[in-house]
Image (cartoon, rainbow, N blue to C red; front, side, top):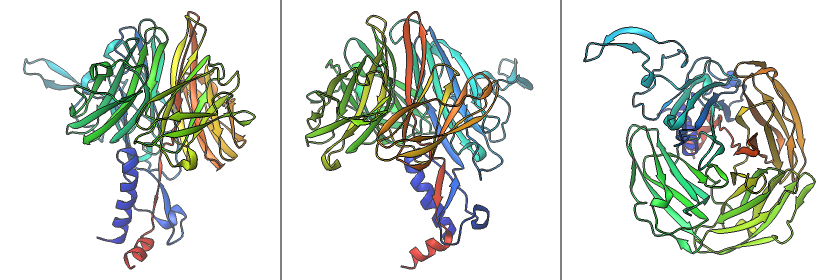
Length: 519
């Protein structure tokens, strides 16, 4: 095996471990402007995303959005296609027709002698990008809106992002529910779920592969692991989605539960849909991996109540130091300076109106970072009787670039925090889905602060648009995006942390690999 092949395997393997799957091509030092012996940073050439089934409500209205930012050095060809998870056939690499285009007759007939249409609805993409830099959308109504499985390659792979946003007019979980589609993985943590009678929480498992996945679901409550009846060995069929109602896994009713998903065989995408009888509902994305330092970015400034749920795996107890990164800097909330967690037990803490009318992010720190923790907050907005809820898990930093979709000229808040050091960021508003010219602004974020920035809006905007955040210097930087509207006096909203899109990968130069092999 030659040196270049070895370097590519190393780079692709490292990236696949965190994104589900990825592929890169051999670097050309001259084309990439890299000197011999240095690592080349190249765009990812293939990646995948999974979107859970949006809703079981007949009143649900869902918008799917797909987008890839323009990336220097990306291939000039490629596709980005999202299909229903129930569709078993693999995407056609040569397919470039618009998902919303007209069907064409192909002259084939069914067993009954009836003529079929090329691009039968069940076989067609739900979303397919036409060009980088311009988002596309599709809509679906009711409980039939599907989970999606998709891949992107070539010029669409680097930074590919997808989102689904659902409005439910009434009933359990009414309000605005949003979730960014994610890559497949083999382990997930969800602090903040519930098996209480007032909640209807589902863990949605989506399998992108052609073989079945086998999954274990562990539940941890206030006194430790809950006894489950059918939580082990759950099979998720190939290229399909499986919603599992958490309250059917255990007889124990608990308000605050941590869900741990472990994949025995294969890989899945996972997200918790948390629906409440009184305060609406939203998606609870997975927390960042267990760590001794966590950041929960972008708590809305008008939050009426903030409830922190945290869990530490293992037997060690920990006293978490709690700070709020506010516009003026890091402060310690009175009465909540430290929070005690018992090993292996879920703990919940009511922090009240923590932000007090200002932008804020929670920063949690274990002594010496020695005890790993996962955490999420449940946020309420609105007055008693007309409240809505959303969730913010501990987030990963934006190392290079991240994108939020479904933005509108009004009702979008971009919140950015730099808890450890000042940072400069660049924010680009894409073209709109129906028209508009991209706009870009740069911002300086002071160390230890959170800022709700006035994000750019495309000139002549028509439709929705994407906001792409790029770190220019300093950091680390964390961010979240809030979408908000008011319906019948109820403040509908949803919050999505912005994870790094991992659209670039460092691939060692061939000569560098040779020196390693010679040692």
